[in-house]
Structure formats: C-alpha cells, structure tokens
Image (cartoon, rainbow, N blue to C red; front, top):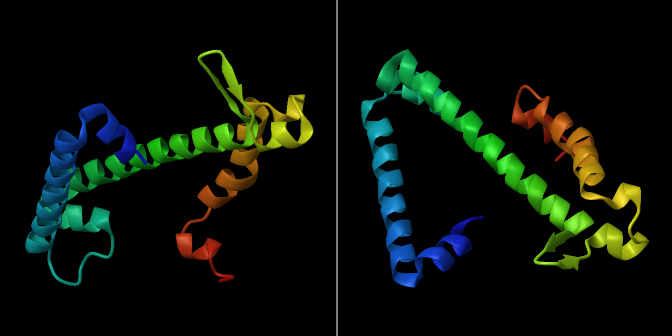
Length: 138
C-alpha cells in the first residue's frame, strides 16, 4: 500500500534502492529462519522464531505480527472510510459512495461507517480461532 508514496517521497532511484534493500533483508531473514530451525517441529512463523531464538524470539515475533496487523487494519479502515463516506482535504470535499448516492446524512458520516464496518465485518472475522474457519464455505 505504501510503495507509491515511498517512490513519491524518495524519488525513483532512491525508492527502487530502498525496495531492493528491503527485498534483500527479507530474503536473508527467511534464509536465517530456515537454516536454524529444526525440521518438522514448527508449523508457524512464531514457532520458527522460537526454534531459532528461544521463547523471547517467539514472543518478539508475535508482538511484531500483532503490531503489523493492527497497522494494516487501520490502513484498511482509512481506505474504507474514504471510499464509502468521502474525505476532505485542503478545503475540498470528495464525496464517497454513500454520500454520492444518498447525500450527506448522519449515517453516511465517516464515524458511523467505520463503526458499522468494524462491528459487522472486522470483529466477526477477528473472532475465529483459525483463519480456515471463516473460509470453509469456499
């Protein structure tokens, strides 16, 4: 989601260099995990980190995954709010889908739309113990 903004802020050459460096670091971290884990014992990323770095490595990996998931959830909520209820910036207001169809109402506002989306979509999806449970109908 942030690659276009990264390239805009850094420029084409520094942005591509940053992307290549991140790809290299990602490849090295995966190689490190694969090299130092015991075969067949771990079934999750946190388990791999636990095999490689002990219980503190496992805990750190789980904390990082939680922080990443919260950040991605916030990004999606911002996008949903912008698309459905519109956005205002620099004195200009861009209508969202609901405001375009029904006009400015209390229920087409950003707060209400994000609240309903969170309660009706994100909360039920987050309540599954395993992600496979939510996709069993496919």
